[in-house]
Length: 195
Image 1 (spheres, helix red, strand yellow):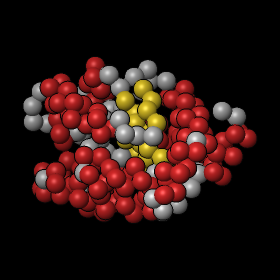
Image 2 (cartoon, rainbow, N blue to C red):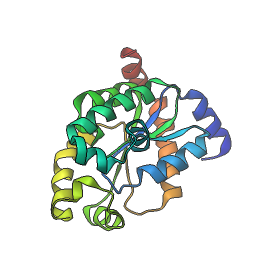
Image 3 (cartoon, rainbow, N blue to C red):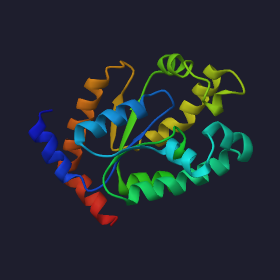
Image 4 (cartoon, helix red, strand yellow):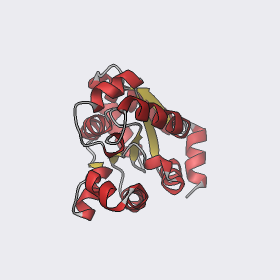
């Protein structure tokens, strides 16, 4: 997408772009690149949660449990989404909280980054910072999480497949799809009816 179209797109944005999807789909990397392309702020919700809690996501899970983490995540995302337009990368399970999911559907442009299970396994295997994968077979856990979450992710305004790993092409595809979404009368009516 050329610079003029990007500038027009940025001027039309009245809400954040929120990236959702499984761990390992590239939400943080693609989100940062998308924000740079649009000259917007980029925020990783996990980083914000860690900053607020004063400890890592893994430590929050260990000390307080997943329910406490999801509650903090909901509060952080509510604050981020109600602010000026920006690009936000969420944790993979953010949309499993019904209130958080509804906030994203209602007040943001949601982008589901999806990837094949084999790709996810290869990517998440590069780190040990995934608390949900620490207690069991990562392949089985990821497959179960995918089965539970994909119907929720599928509600996103935009779906793109990040399996190829071509970040520049993904960013361009997202920009074009956001431009299309903003131009659709149905999207504008849906979002305006909720304000």
